[in-house]
Length: 340
Image (cartoon, rainbow, N blue to C red; front, side, top):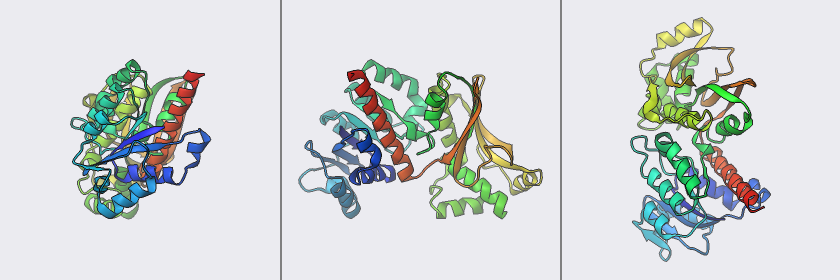
């Protein structure tokens, strides 16, 4: 399986580390990955005979960019230019999320699909803005677009909703989809911290970015909700269809008041009856959705199965990289089915 990687941050490096260590699911599904190109902000590293994963990781650590290789490095080459030049079977697209216009990930995915590459991505931006169109493009070109790591990291939220509940009609979804805000609200409830104090703690621990606005304003949750609604509920929607209110106005007094009533304030994303919404809600301590810390939780209400809830860690390099491997395995299995 010839792979080109665009994006080489935390998730991309975790994935390549698993490849270098021979992660079990790869051999279990007869996947023999050959990474032929990697692109990061500094340029690209290309060898159509295949790159050594350990050497790529060492180069990135030592020199800051994969393009620093003196013979195979191509400084300044963009991901899009690389995709137009290299021959591969699969694009692994793990560039940072851009919710404004989905770029450059959206162009990377489109170009790969047009060229007949399968695509595995963890990038929420392009999916939240253009998932129905991207799925149509993949189908037209006879390739697969997989993105199970875009929602829930390594927790198979999308797989449960789409495949685990196959044969049911998913009528509604409610979920805690953002670990940063859930950590902040948990610390406010359990330690009596103010919003600012809890946010600073989350940043110190690496749970929140220096600019946490996408998380705190509810936009990250909204992106994930749109992906779930499109993929699981077969809605045709985009980020602009979501009514969003984040947690910036939540006060310590409100959190304490909820706690006194046996409730917790949570940032809940919900989809039902064609409506999509993200807002702070009171959740009973006894509800499955009342998870703490950085955990994510999603409840699907399906007919006739009833309510089904999944809980797990929603982020992290190794966790999300495990979803990439899961998606590669599914591409391999689907391709084998078509050949058979």
